[in-house]
Structure formats: structure tokens, C-alpha cells
Image (cartoon, rainbow, N blue to C red; front, side, top):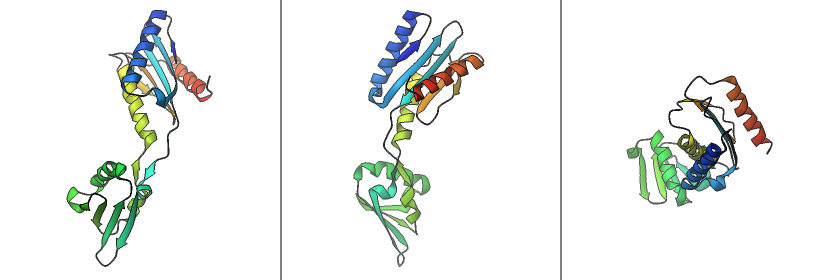
Length: 186
């Protein structure tokens, strides 16, 4: 972790704030590295966080078996991994009303019609979940009042430039430097 600031005490304080927020959100083991730039004279805060690699997205057919009964025109879904049931129901309720999904027991769902296309529905995306948690941390870390924010994030790096005035090109260049350094493990 690197916090750049001309004021050593200010850098130490921000390092403590960042560590505390990461501890509160249990993010320490999910982050490879972090770089921050703070300059109270310019009112700017640049923060770049490299996420660790996560497992692949879980598709519906990874955790359930599908069958379609042509005679009754019903798609039956047998849930093999109950841990994903809340995510599955949440995703299905976005597409269907709760009344359209019949659940005779904990492991079985039935939907009228041919819905075999649901097999490729993403029921859990660890990368997206981690990214959302990191954005939560970022918005807790940013100084209050810095409402002008430019998001420069890439696939595995969350990077923002925040200020309370117009964003300068030099700050965006600093953010791109951080992204390059994090990509090259510098």
C-alpha cells in the first residue's frame, strides 16, 4: 500500500483510514495492492485498488438440473446446490412474478413454459460482487465533499479521481500511472 502526500502525517492518517475501512469490510485478503494520492492544496484524491483474481461466474446449470415436460408445458428445475437458492430466486423474480414460480419443495422449482434458456443465466458472479464491495470501500475512503468523481476502472483495478472542483488532466495522468504500476506490479 502506498499513500502519496507531501504531508507525511496526512499520508499516515489516510493509511490508517484505509486499513480500518478494509478491515471493517473484510477486504484485506481480496486486494493485491493499493495506491493513493492525496494533495490538500489541489483538493484531489486519486485511489487505485488492484483486486485479486476471483473464481468464474456460476451459471444456473452449474448448480441445477433442468428438464422440460412437453406434455404439461412445464420446466422443472432441481437445485443441486442450495447455497445458491437465494441468488437463483432473486434472478428468477426479476424475469417472472413470484406467482409464476412454483416451489413444491426446497430443491425444486417449476415454471410454466419452455425455459431451458435459463440454464445460462448467471446466478453468482464473484468478480462483480468483489468489485461492488471495493466501490463501497472507495466511497467510504473518499474525503467528504469530493463530489466530482471520474471512474477510470479497468477489469481488475478500481480507480477513481475525486475532487470538489474541475478534474485536471494531471490528476487523470496520475491515475493512469497508478493503473500501469498496479498492472505491472510496481
